[in-house]
Image (cartoon, rainbow, N blue to C red; front, side, top):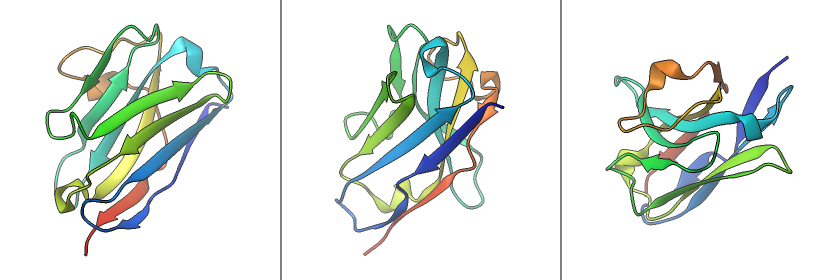
Length: 126
């Protein structure tokens, strides 16, 4: 059974940092395009970042570019989202997702992702 499990969420002050992890089981992330997404209260889910299955393409939403860094560790079968200089506007539930042999186009196609984690809450507040 394919499963993605996020961890690392929580409360952080503006300007702080957090690292989210997303552990995959039941499949090998190496063969999958992966992405991070977020949904704030009352808003639609939006794409944050993605990496193609080949690793050749990486994209970030304009709102997080330069502050967030996405990566994956094929040995640990885990993807990460390092979030720096956090702002209150970053408050949301963050989801990881994967799609077999997926690319990472611009803009990021949320609907193309097939497997999703359960989400983890990030709250940026003083």
